[in-house]
Image (cartoon, rainbow, N blue to C red; front, side, top):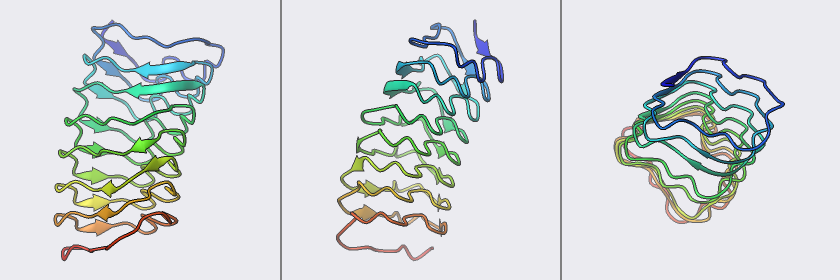
Length: 193
């Protein structure tokens, strides 16, 4: 099996236990497992996967371990892990990732620790980390990022260090950092914004 097509298992809420994938899988298409709230445990996407569809795992609220992403994925699409509210631990985003889509990790509110954004990243979409309130430490936006979307980090109240914005930044969306009340230190807005 190399591809799981769109909506293949969407809203199959009766599944319980872990979700495992074959090592030769390359594609998990849009909405493939959306609303499969019965799966539990960690979610490991094998390194063979090169494409992840929008909302592929949206609403998989039962997953309650760490998320491990393929090191060949370049885009985290819109809504990919939206409301996967049970995923825990540090979120590791591989250096291959260039774009984080709208609502990609919205309300993944048990992800914790420092958020390390990859140096290859150029865009952070609208609501990308909406209400991810367990991240702590500094929020460092990498040097290649040109756009931070609407409400991208709204209600990320756990950050308790400094924020660093890159000189490449051209756009900060409305309410991008609203209620990030723990951020402290100097704030330097780049000239290009």
